[in-house]
Length: 112
Length: 111
Image 1 (cartoon, chains in turn red, cyan):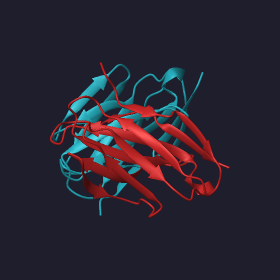
Image 2 (cartoon, helix red, strand yellow):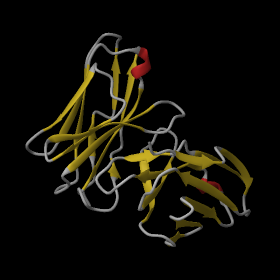
Image 3 (cartoon, chains in turn cyan, purple):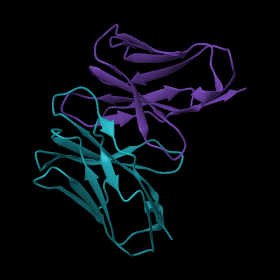
């Protein structure tokens, strides 16, 4: 069965650089969520999209932005990267009124 | 604001023993999730509990939900080393919302 695809799997950036993370949801899933998980931490909700519109916003820094495209894939854009942005970034998808969220394998971002 | 609390946060146990992880949440919810995460890996869905009194079992793991007490348990029976991982419970406040995670329980099973 198709899963949630995230790319890249690993990314190394320097401070003040920009990064773009991509997420391809399960086919026919209409909602995408982004989470950030720091070392030894629980996943923290960043932002979500339903039918290409932002549906909810969590603790996402102003330096980050995201969008969902017409094919339902989503991108998380991160600018002016800081050392503290180093984390695992997960994307999850679901049906709006379905049960369960499926998480991608994550992108490990390291800022040096 | 929805809060999700797990305990214990760390658990070291011998193989063959039984133990229970607890998950409390602060506001009404009708969905509770349990995930397993191995170090540096993704979140693997274990159980989705949808109603009061729901009980689900998979191998040595059994999860239950008491929505009146706002409590879920994850019971481990006759633990084996392969179950060593971090276990997260997560709750959504309503069917349209994101899920909020507990801090996780880091389980280490000694051979």
